[in-house]
Image (cartoon, rainbow, N blue to C red; front, side, top):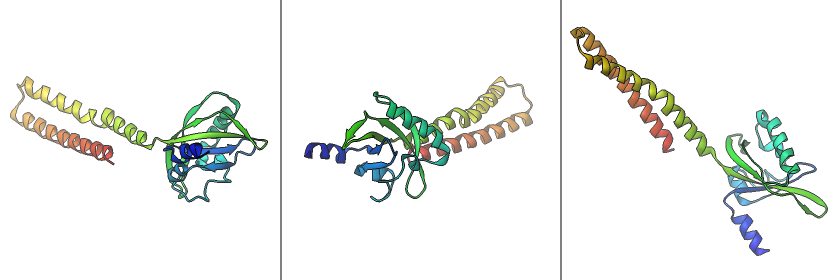
Length: 181
């Protein structure tokens, strides 16, 4: 059993085991306490729905039913509540059910994917926030290259160009800051 203890306690992903009849958590490995940023008394005995924010409960109940009614591995993205109430995105993968001492249990593996939320924000900024000033810069430079505009219009276009470049620079700085959190 030392081999299994080593695998479970050394796993980088959180492992939670729930009694499928009650939905209560009966086991959590050390990675689970780290993921939920909690002490050892926080997880054991909690109903599995208490690990998620209220707005996720219907979804989580449905997924738990799917997990315990299937012999296949299933996975879903979800949000968990840490002990102090902060939220974190996770990928939950279910394992086959198993029996112990006359009770049926389900194990689930929780992987922290909160870094993907940051990547989604960065992708949105790149595709929407950065594109607007870049499109405006291209438009202004096209007008300037065409020439034939009065001197005062050229000055206005150059001022507009400078303003768009400043917006572009600020967007890139925000993205860089998020990328290196």
